[in-house]
Image 1 (cartoon, rainbow, N blue to C red):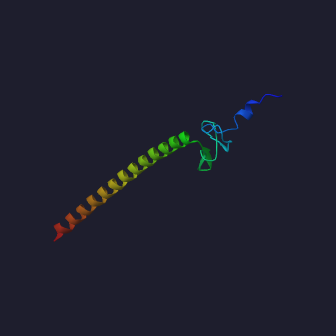
Image 2: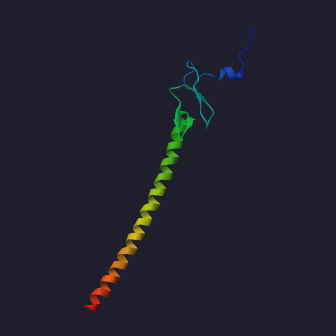
Image 3: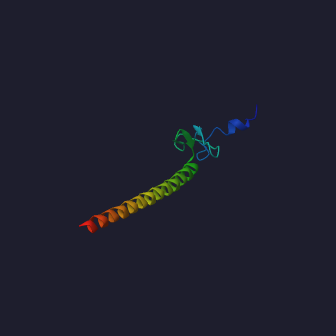
Length: 94
């Protein structure tokens, strides 16, 4: 009788040892079953690694949104200042 190899022992889900592995998490390299595997941007992740990816994506999105809002505010301020100068010049000529 032969002993199981290391690769055969890893062919079960890391979260559900009674289920066969379906995918490999590309971050932590755990094997996970079909229920635990989630594909995001074409890459398989386990539940904990996917949560970390989503948190980092949210953080990047909020920074980009804040920078866009700041740029838009600066643009509107500059346009308002030009409009007030133009209206002042127009009122002075009357």
